[in-house]
Image (tube, rainbow, N blue to C red; front, side):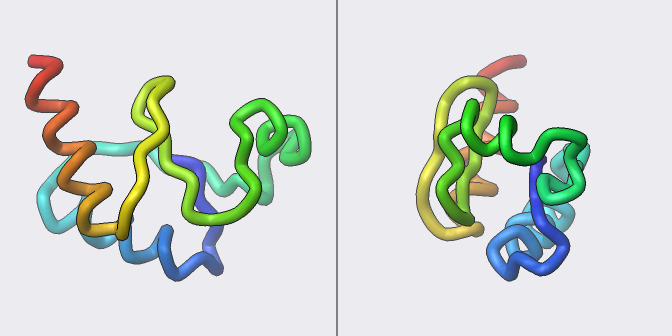
Length: 76
């Protein structure tokens, strides 16, 4: 999960994922070694930009957490 420590949406999504024991790794997008290139390649024009694999997801954090959990279940 590329996130920002100051982002309220990232914080909410992080909490929703943790509450469902959904495994994830987090990286601060603002501290990425080439943040400008990252945001350009991934077409991130603002927060909240969430991808699962190559698929961009949308919606409020709780809905996003549900979509991520469903993708993980479907992958099994």
